[in-house]
Image (cartoon, rainbow, N blue to C red; front, side, top):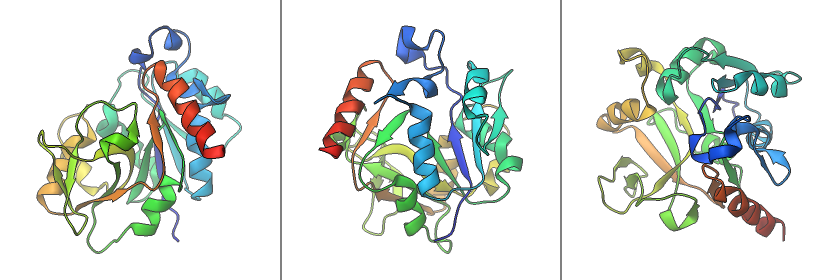
Length: 231
């Protein structure tokens, strides 16, 4: 199994967390006595991801200090928060090659390692993106009907209001076409739509549990998920 570079998104302001992020960046909020970003880094280590790049913005100096003992590169967005697409494009010189894995730092997982699942199912010949997904009922902390519809070959299209599968914040993605996008600040949704039009975006359903930790109540829900997996 080949190793992939990993972009770990950790630059968000965490405003939905309210007072919890007044003096602490969301990636350092603890779930089951461990900072969220450490949960993500454990997944990365098990998947042998390298190099690993973390982007920072809000209270980024705390994240840098937390990571200082690890061989991890930091892509600082001190002056301007670039969103996922702009942040990934800025980090490309540190990631060194394409395709790359990306992982959000504000969720916890149970079951099979999401990054290993993706790397085991990646197909260079037909994929520009492979997104990890779940049915809405299996996506704890998520609100809404879902993001994508998947055909029997695994190919994705936008759900466009129909009940669909939820994107869980983990993927493998070719980065070449990021250069086509003129905006400095943009979401990866913009790139996905271009790749979907080419029929080269695929999905994979996560074999395990997942919980978004975007709001304060998500902490207890995530800890319950992890405790249930250990029981």
